[in-house]
Length: 204
Image (cartoon, rainbow, N blue to C red):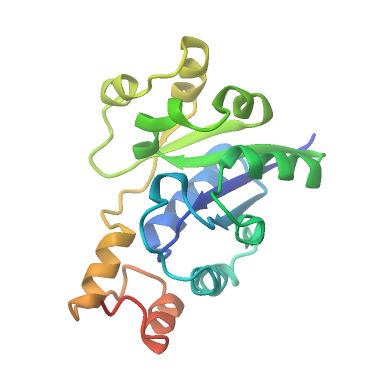
């Protein structure tokens, strides 16, 4: 039986506890051997938004997951540079892990735009796509209405939609709280909190 590996991409600017909860839920509900966190060089939907340098985002990820053998971090998209398309990344991992079943992990907020993704039809030929519902998005009909894919792909997405542990925080809220001098303890791993303050990130 081939091993199942999750691919979890995003800005991770910064990684927060909600990301880790989704990854853990993915391991358990999808029977994954490993989840690979892959920070984007330039996310397609954030091409005109200034990001924290990739080095810092990568370092925070590594600190956050280094003690969990289920998780790893890859600089694949950062090294490739340019706009980070999931299709290109999955293609790389098909070659790198030919013995693995790949599962692309996304938040349910992504479903509204999934039909616009680069080479989305071909992406579904290479991997599973599994979504995890964010806080306030536990209505199956609401999710169904968001998915504008062709019927065959829509059915596959809806069959792979899961509830995750609810954690109502976002990376943008973390950045805002740091800029305003508010606490972020318990919202991010302790190692990430320390890194943010030591490097003066998100001060505005």
